Picture 1 (tube, rainbow, N blue to C red):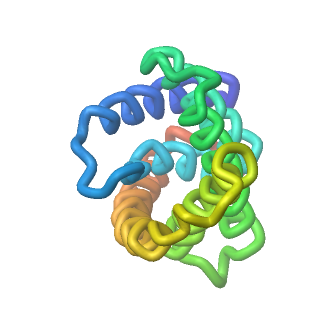
Picture 2 (picture 1 turned 180 degrees about the horizontal axis):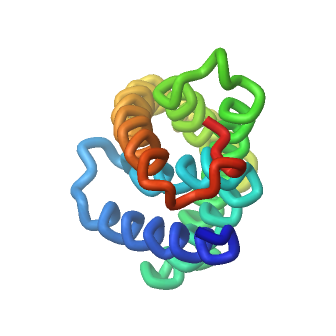
Picture 3 (picture 1 turned 30 degrees about the vertical axis):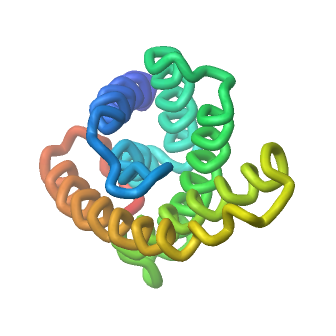
Length: 173
């Protein structure tokens, strides 16, 4: 598959996953499992970091337009967290091939996503540390969801490798 076609297809799939995820009740306030990050990671593995960023940005922008949250605080948190997590996962895939499994990569991504959102919330919105009591609970949730997305990502990447959809030169993992 041509990269110019792969990015919009993966981005559209990420938007659908993102919107479906918004309908799932959250066990902890302000928490989503981040299932759409699986699609960004697939983009990173097969197409590179830039493709992963495009997929994430399109997902966040289009998803927020559908959800009615474009340019809201939730959008800013999602955009910043998604960008930072995608960059962190990209660095793990490209530079840490022999050090990070896809599960480890997703754990890094989930942790970076959460910490980035807390930093942005602190700087832009809250200005005090009263909300920091949520960090341990949400970090535990991020580790659980990062493990789940890592397992699913690993299974999907292995399946995709065997389909021949992507040119071998594009496969990073």
